[in-house]
Length: 271
Ligand code: HPA
Image (cartoon, rainbow, N blue to C red; front, side):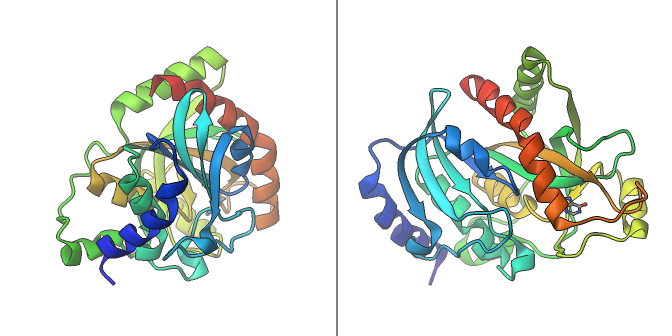
């Protein structure tokens, strides 16, 4: 079924329950779902109940689409996201983003848990994403040719400079250190090898993770403003002499998520 028709069906399910349209779409990454508890929820939907949404099966992710207010802003929030390593296609992964856009959201805040590649980073750091490297070997915009949305999307200013300035301001006001760097996204689900991490560092990557890039590509195609934040839950493979585990990533992100939550709440009124 064409994308436009799938979007219409999802919206027909959601819109009757909404009193206002959301301005900001927020995607919560691994272990970062706690921010949803701070939201004044007006309406929520299980992904499984929304036409054409796929359920999120990743650890640390629940699958709910929430509508409400936070820091005075009208938000639609994905509590739990879909990953390529779960077998979801790029098209399926960005479908919720397409629906949030169609419902009125014109700003995307996207969060994730990531491994620190930059040797100057430490576990618990927050990194503002300045740019990304798509190392998935896949791209959701290939559906664009079919949908006539146009494929040659300019990615020069994708992580909106004005929003990055606001993020730095909010971090300063809160006394939080905010790193800024390049996110390299890849499919996973294995952690990278130490050799891969060394290679990625020479490419200019500061953090590595298994999400975000597809949603940002779809948002860029739609002309949305984008702000991306990575929580450094571990140093990437080979940097510290210790094994990596998915459970540790989620545990650390839950502990360190509070600063990320404060930053987003501090930032929202100025977006
Ligand atoms: N690699 C890839 N994805 C991740 C990592 C990592 O080290 N940490 C959290 N997500």
